[in-house]
Length: 164
Figure 1: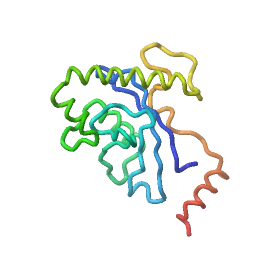
Figure 2: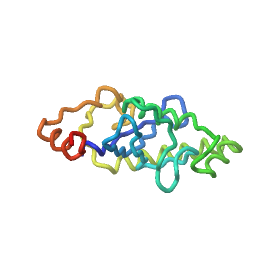
Figure 3: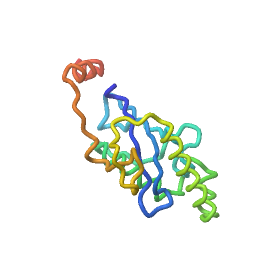
């Protein structure tokens, strides 16, 4: 469906999240671009800004924000958590009071994300891998665009009710 997307956010280099492969689901409605998509981590990290039960992250949405900006914001949220109003209070407290312990929990979360990713079927992934970037975590921008047959686009567009 054009309104339900699957994405991957990788941990930023030179942070404890480096090497992490976190799968996301983004669900858009017909008002997208004015209203935020529903975002859920399918690979739920131990993080103050991610609900441990639902995988929903806390993020700032600005109308007109593009998908690339949203994904980059989620990547930055992982690396630089906000402790003001945590969605996962335990993670928020631990990040504030026991940062060394949290680094180990982050590394465990990264390792688990890689184990989960290895079990998932790989689609459209280059066989070549430099070793620096995990398979499935290639640079974001070149892979965002894909061609959609007009018939499929028209069917999804018609279902959204935008033209009625």
